[in-house]
Length: 175
Image (cartoon, rainbow, N blue to C red; front, side, top):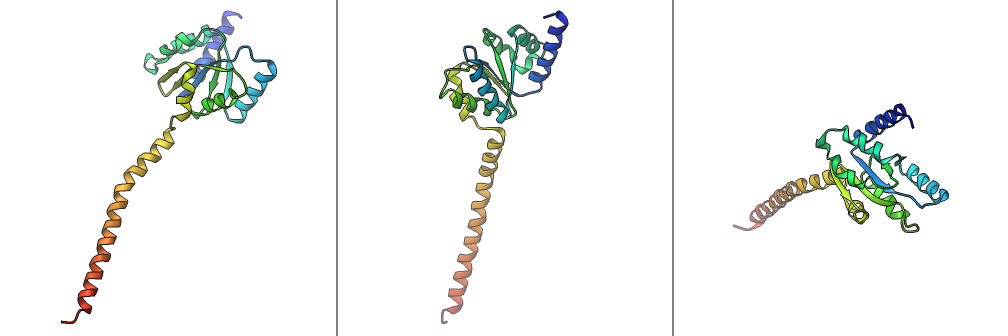
């Protein structure tokens, strides 16, 4: 690979990894070609982009991003063969890995980058699959905020009904 090819690859990786808030670093070595193709097909069906690159190129692409993104915590995971999974959904790659690993021993999760948080190690798959998405969290917050308002509205309605009942009883009562 020439220096020009390396610079092009680094620029492409920088653009892809720098513009996505969610990506996973995995090790899919030792999988047969048929199994890799099956895994890639599943990734395609779930809208997950799969990319294989040299660790040094990945690290250089990540190093060129601002420190505030927190990519430095990923550098120790860049050893051995690395496959990058990029998705718009933070849970999709974790769910896919969990599903695929029911029948295969790989790919192994090296690290995941989710909105400036880094999850290192294969044991983090369970945590990542249970993590709630931004939309799910917003929905829960809205539900929690609506709950007191609904209770107040029902109390006002109930109180109005009770008062109307009392007034009606008083009207019907002989004097």
